[in-house]
Amino acid sequence: MRIIRTACIGVWLCGTAAACDSASSTGDTVDDVAGDGLEEDGAVEAGDEDVAADTDIAADGEDEDEADVPPPPLEWGPCDTSDWPAGYPLPADGVECAALDVPLDYGDPSAGTIPLTVALHRSRHHPTGLAVFNLAGGPGGSSIAQSGIIPVTMPLLRADFDLVYVDQRGTGRSGYMGCPGGYPETRGEWEACAAPYASRDLNHYLTVDAAHDIDTVRERMGYERMYVRGGSYGTRLGLEVLRQHGDKVVAAVLDGLAPPDIDLFGDSIPLFDHGVDLLVAECDADPACLAVSPTLLDDLRLRREQLRATPRPVFFGSYPDVEDEAYYLMFLEAFLYDAYWRFDVPRAIHQAVLGDNTLWNALLSDLTGYAVTDRAKGGAGGGRPGERVIRERLVRHELAQDYVAPGVFITVVCAEWLPNSAGPAALRTMLADQEWPDDTHVILAEACAAWDVDPLSADLRGPVVSDVPTLLMNGELDLNTPAEWGPHAALTLPDSTSLLVPHATHATILVDCASQIMSRFLMADGAMATVDTSCLADIPHPGW
Image (cartoon, rainbow, N blue to C red; front, side):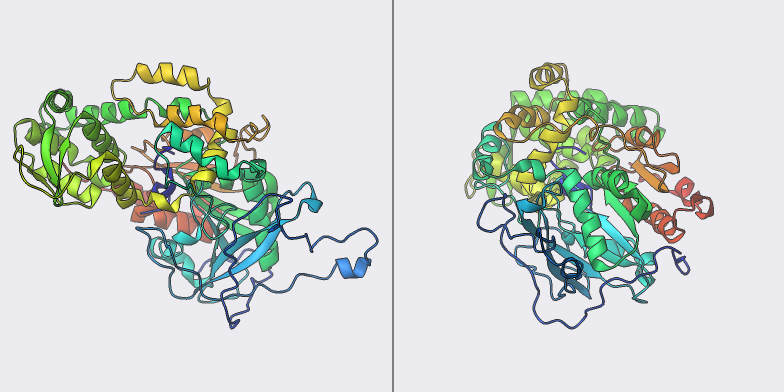
């Protein structure tokens, strides 16, 4: 889970399902309720005026029968699609949303409640009592924003499985925790973003709370048990659901593992270097690649030196700008992290060092959303967009980063993964040793001090032990959640299977073979022996 772009990276992009014997009750079937039932207020801390009294918990002296009265059915209606994240399709036909309140602090009912928004896509055979809960990447991603993608990538589930999407507290339609200046890039911006949340108890916006929320929604919707599918950070949440409520999970699919016990900060700093090493080694061993890029490592280094010495004049659309070393590193890293561009880099960079920028410009155009062309020095144009504008457009175009709630993002990584690291000073020392540096993780680590959230307890940062049938998927070339994190998680999941998807980077759900394996695993209630995985061996190399 690469920190700058994790969010969305983790979400992009037969036969009859076997019924689960123990999932006999049905999901909520209220289909004709007018209005969307959505709450636009942000989630707030206990004591703020918008925190409701917890009406689901009986007060002392209250009649016992009255306390056992079930809450009213959820009111389903159209989902609010205003300010929908860029790059994500709108909800599929038939998706409806509803709001419900959950405890702010599951250990203290008197602390009040906060609102969540949940979306439901009923199966064609609804009601069946079967539901897949889809957990978003991030941390801070909107699960509801996936409601137009998941039905396309996992169509086999649509016959018998309801698809459920819960916007985690502080994300999406559940009180999006944004920053006044937009998505932060610098340490100062991350620190400034903490100010609006200074009075909020951020210790209740962590993964364990979100796991309890998932089970609360399951119970409220009437599902006896659930199936879980998570990608990127959604695997961290999925693992916590297994730890806290594994008895309510039939089977789980986790794609791009981010276990709680890894040193995410320390392990991620060398990944740019590792990505270059992987590409060079693969190219040097493949005659087809050597034919288009006989000296790849030399070319990558030479291009960097060329742009450091003489930045290249370019147009981004009508805007004149220059591609300098900083731009080059930013673009190259983005290409390495995504299989869509990665395999074009050797040919493009070799042509570029020889003076032909045509293919490199085409890659930049695809990545940034601007038409990138060469510009003669001093040529006319319509004003410089600047690195910040390009970076924001790049990130949003590539991975729709505006889908991530930055307040939740930094709260979770600071509380849950920074304590696993050697600390900000050691991380900066580690960064200095990299040939291909990216200071994103160091900036975040240094900014954590401004966020008033406690380090997560050691037991909740430990490995998850669960006997729930679990399928662990990783891309062979994943630089966001490296492939070895999957087998690592499997060490304490005795009924798990770890699969590697050839030639894939992050989000293997976008690979047709992988998504079919995931679907069939859930349809088989996690009986892996019945799932055919032979298509993995037939995935072709994308070519150079």
